Length: 163
Image (cartoon, rainbow, N blue to C red; front, side, top):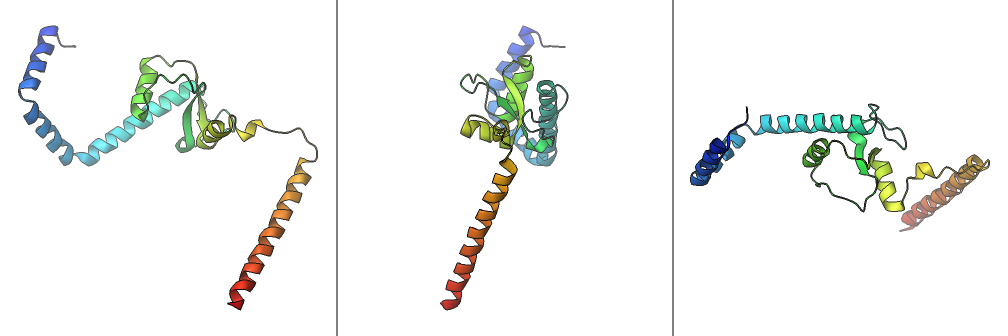
């Protein structure tokens, strides 16, 4: 049952009058119960994260780009980065999303796809080339890299033995 306006005003006056004492008691309580409070905050954050991710991934909880499903790797991406109207802090962000009834413009991405999108404009998973010679080109490139790497290791070892 919500407080009436009169009760709310009385609470405000009481807090203003006893602010230092109330802050001291809150600090003591936190120090006494720090582990329990941190655990409750972590649980609340995970619950909010799951709720938000389920909504934006249609209950699949996976990256829309590569299909990653580990929740520790998933993040919420603002599709249009220029129109950021939400808070930065994580729990505040999830609460903002829920309070605003899941606004459009967000998608679930893994951290790799999200970083790639922000650095390069789109994720490398979206750059699949329809090139029939791609496997042989990749193998050729890797073999050349391996030769150079082996050559430089051998020459470094040779130099070290001479010193």
